[in-house]
Length: 350
Image (cartoon, rainbow, N blue to C red):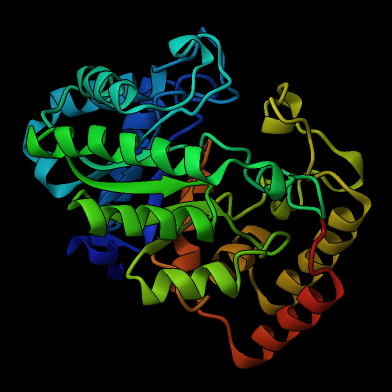
């Protein structure tokens, strides 16, 4: 297993980050135990979760994933120092989480305490803002004029960011969190937080996780260049585009128990004619070069300049083993060129 620095934190994280959002709905405690054990055997030291998990989010599954990780930690206390555990505070919009209110400094302090209890640990290695208070161009909202940036009150958003940083600062000083990060944010969001941190001597964001995959590579090059030069770790989530890049949903297929058979909060926005056409091509390309479709997508993600650690998730051990194997399968120059040719044909499939 290879490792990279988590931005400016100085912490070494594995190039594979074990995602956990299915634990508590599609997977139970025993499944999670097995996945953690296997991942750690392979050298994975990075686990990502969130207070709102499992997904899709609901009042019934809120906090369950953190509790499952906490149960494992309570039985393996000697392993805590070997892991980098990342979790996230939910943004506004979910009425069962703090009344659906946006993130504030006070909300951060309460959410951190609640996550610590569920995780059964004294500290969180990386605490992330799951999505910003303002509407951002993520979750299918990246097409022209879907988000009206001209309608954003930048001064108010900046003041809110300062309040959030001050809440994070209190948690850092109390030893409850070690480092802070972003999720589903933009270059403006990153740089505004950095400027506020420097001006007011507050914690610096060390990472960002955004959706990034063969069907959705919009963060390259501009946001990723910014991350590299500002020492921000870039952590792709959904490298399989919600599972579609595995090929299992081609031609309208909906295998029993898969994510696309469960109601999705944002709908199946990745299910487009362009996505299906692109996936069909990637499936053929993977077969030609001796990869599974999932392995091709993950190996491609891993070799992108600027990617620190790719967040993977699996509902079965077979999937987990297949996915981790991908990080030992570098792409040949010929395969890279073939993928590049497809990316030019399908640059924005959804």
